Image (tube, rainbow, N blue to C red):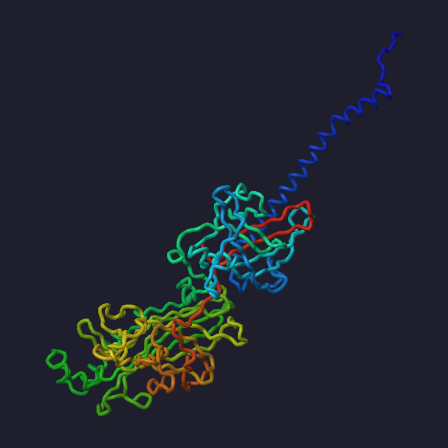
Length: 559
C-alpha cells in the first residue's frame, strides 16, 4: 500500500501564519475604520450645515413677529423671548505693507465731543435661542442660536478717521489673518468674536471715499412709511378712476331732470331736446346742488366652506338738491332730492392669504368735480366720507390695546379727471409766505385758497372701531408761525346730508358718530419697522467635542 506523504501544518506554523496575517490586516482594518468614521462625520457635518442653512433661510424670510414664536409644535421655535443688547465693535483695515490685519483700530467720530476719539461703533443685537436638534444618523445634539445685528448699518453710517466712509471688506482670505485671532466668515469677511463666540467685537473694513460723498443713513432708523409690497390680491388698492362716478352721476341726473321736465312741461322738454334753451335743466334739478359721499365698509366673515375673510367695500352716493316748488317731485326720506348709489369696490381677502390682520387699504382720493373749464377743474366746497369699520387688528405697537385698521387716503400728483388741472396749492393765504411744497390740498376753484372741506364720520355710534387714516392732504397745522391752509378734514360736526346712508353691518345702529381727529395723521407720522435690515448669524454648537461648530451668515431685509 502506498504511503500518504501529505503532512498538516504544525501548531507553530499556524501561530506564525496568524501573526503574519494580523500584522498585515491591522493597518487595513484601521484604515477602513478611519474611512467609515470620516464618512460618518462628513455626513453629520453636511447635515449640520444643511440645518444651519435652513435656519438661516427661515430667519431671512420670516417676520419679526413669527421669529419670536415659542410654539414647540414647530420645527424651529424659540425656547424663550429673544434677548436685546448692545455691543461695541472695533474697525480694522489691512496693512498694505504686510497684507495682514493692522494692529490699531480706526478712530471714529464722536458727536458728543466733536472729535475722532471713539475706538468702536455701538450696534444692536437680538439673540434667539432655538430648540436643540439631533442630526440624522448621529448621537450628537446641537444647540442652536441666531443673532440679528445691525453692525453693517452702523458702519455705513459712521464717520471714520478724518471724514471718511468705510464698509465691511468681503474680499478677504485666510492669508490676511497673519498672527491675529481673526477668523474668516462664510461671506468672506474677517471678524473677531467675543469670548462666547457670539458677538462680533472686531471686523476688517475698507475705505470707500469721503464721508460727505458716501455717507449712508442707518436704514433701520429711517421710517419706511407706506412702502409695502403692493399686491392687489392681498391689499385693497382703490384708484381714483374707480371711485370717480361724477360723469356717470351727471348723465343719470340729466336723465332724471329730462324725465321730470317731460311730464311737467312738454314744450320746454322739446326745446331742451332741440338744444334751444339749456337753462331749463337747472329748473328741473340738473346739477343744481350735487353732493357726494364715499362710504368705506370694513368687516370680517366666513364663507360656506368655513374659510375666514376680511371684506373691504366702497360705495359712492350722489344727492342732488331739487327745487321744492316742482309739483311732480317724488318725496323720498322727507325730501325731493335725487339720489344715486354706485358700488365701486368690493373684495374679499382670505385670512389664509393675508394673515390675521386686515390688510392696509390704499385709496386714491379725489373730491367731487362740479365743473371744469379748459385746464381748470372745480371741486365742490364740501365732501363727505363715512368710515363703516367693525374690526380691529392685533396689538402690534405693544401698548396693550388693539390697533385700528390702517388706510392711506392719498392725493395723486396729477388729477385723475384732468391731467392738466390746476387744482393744487402749495402756498398759504399770503403768497409771499411760502410753505412746505408737500402741503398740497384740494381747493374748490383755481383763483384762491378756498379749500374743499372733507367731513369724516363713523357710520355707527354702536361701533367704536376706528380706522387710522394716513394722508398727504393737510391733517394738521404744520407751522403755526405762518398762516397755512387749515386741515383738509373736519371731524367736529355730524354730516347733515345723506341721512339715509346706514351701516352695512347687520343690526348696526344708523346713528352717526363724529370721527376722532387723533385717527387722521399726516404721512410723516406713518411708521413701518417690521422688516428691517439685519445681518443674520446662525450658530450650531455640538455637545461632542469631536464635532465641528457650524457658523453661517446672511442678510435679512434685502434681496
